[in-house]
Picture 1 (cartoon, rainbow, N blue to C red):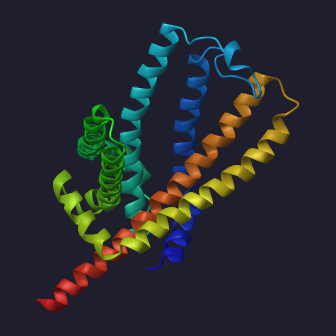
Picture 2 (spheres, rainbow, N blue to C red):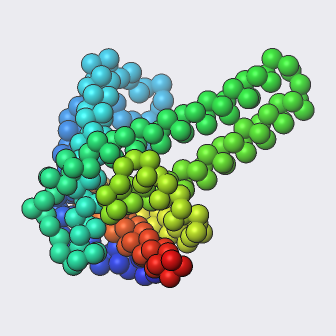
Length: 275
């Protein structure tokens, strides 16, 4: 399966399963509406506003925003598990089992949470190592040492980015192959190494498509809401963004799931031929 075929598959899955898109739309809309409610008026600066006129965020508002953000992330993992599993079912057997969405979300919750924590921990370790290398040379006041340390830190950062890309298929491996955290990471690394540029270009293409559509929707929405009161305009923008995120979220998920299943299938076929 090529990149364009995977993207076509992603749009097809999203367009034929608008009920799932609607579920994610409602989830995103709730987040946007609650976020607008929690964030006090005037905190978000108007375009062209003087930075000195922006009021400080009250501690209670900052705490409420942080608490709800953590809650949103935790619920997002449940939504991710349910969405990944029903998308996998549709691609594999042509049936979207929405009635099992909740059970799927619970089934994969702890594994997806563990996977996220492991990846975050790895990123933090790499970032700390790079920062320590740069910090260790700062007291020397030596330009050459600083340049060398910076180059080494950048190299470590690039290695970290490469490693994160190797793990991009982990959630898809976990759900489609019914594996644990470590095994899903191993399978992702094995698949991505064999098709690194194809997977990287798929990611880049999807991001560019999302940016392009997002900019176009932003321009249209901005023109439509220009004459509306500020609060009404924010609500309209929140609704439009929630709809786009719900739809394109399924597009990306289905594109990567279809590609993973194709690549894993090829790998399995090769193994059968060898043995």
